[in-house]
View 1 (tube, rainbow, N blue to C red):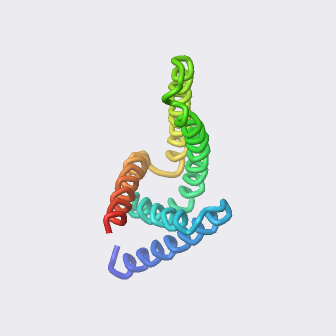
View 2: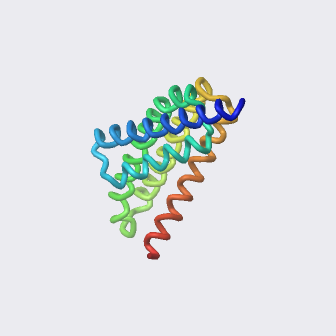
View 3: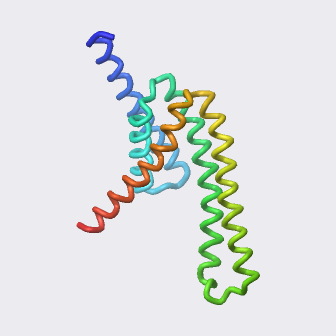
Length: 157
């Protein structure tokens, strides 16, 4: 690939990234997300796109699948958070039976997350090579660490 072709490819990827960020903002706004959530989603899209080194063709196929994956994971996590918050206030006064139920609910929630991951790993491999699917899950963890680091820095300022 010569210099001109590389430059054109970079321009296409940059344009695609801006379109994806705009699309993510629209989707998040439709979901009722706030400005902070929109910013985090845009950061995540940029982070994952860069880490996965997605071609425009891959990105076009990948993002709809990833958005469905993310939506399913979010539904499971929200349900789990709601249960945990409800039970958290009662933890000190829980009976052993109630504590066992809470533990079983936590395990069931994690199992549901794992099933979603298994399901979407198969879906991701339909649109990306297996190496990029591995990179995706590693990049998601790296993004979470990076986000936590930035939040800690902001609180420190």
